[in-house]
Image 1 (cartoon, one colour):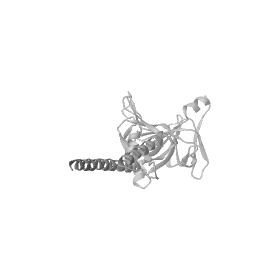
Image 2 (cartoon, rainbow, N blue to C red; image 1 turned 120 degrees about the horizontal axis):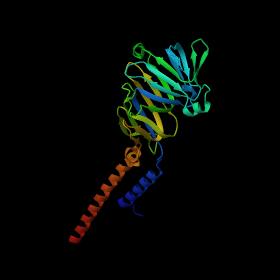
Image 3 (cartoon, rainbow, N blue to C red; image 1 turned 45 degrees about the horizontal axis):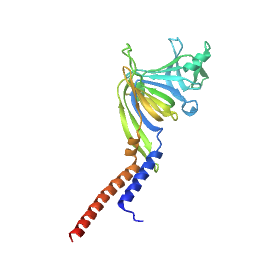
Image 4 (cartoon, helix red, strand yellow; image 1 turned 90 degrees about the vertical axis):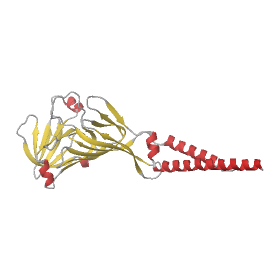
Length: 293
């Protein structure tokens, strides 16, 4: 059996087609980086290791308390909770703890625990209801080598879409980027397959996550919060100011074009097409010469 360039070309096409058909389609890894004044975070109950944030000279306000209590120690997320983290420009940092809506509804009038605070060398304080923790002088702390860094693992919403809010001091996402990553179909290489910039006022959340999002939130001398996390999901939802939204995902064409293994296949395919063209041209010239003779 003769292996002509045409047959080799057909084999390459069939192999590439089979690879594309078998290529995983459902999930993509997204790296999300943002400068945002607003983050909403629901810790994953299974990730107990990251559910402890060290705070120094923070002021805790419980319910309608307007005086607060200065504490230093570890904030522990021992119960299902939603944490809203805000920092307007270079102002103080605010952590707002509240029970998820379903849990609060099931509790009725009973107080709902949202975590505990373990003070240094003191007994732990159980936190109930709506709790706010304020941390002042973030910029000065950072310049003194004490920035605030919080590990996160769970569900995150970065920024919030602005509709018809009248508050001129509302916390928003300032800028950011979503980078799409995937693993090569052969080998362990991870490649980038494009990115999408985020605009002021966008709201970022994860659609159908395969697992918890993990990363960190940092407050330092720079304005707002630096948010960095990774998600494995089908797509990322971006809400736009004034309403409307769009998904960020990875198409088969993007995967195929960026995969280094498939890129080598494309190069081989192009080479074989060129070889086939040359082979046909030489064959045509030979036949022409034979007829002339």
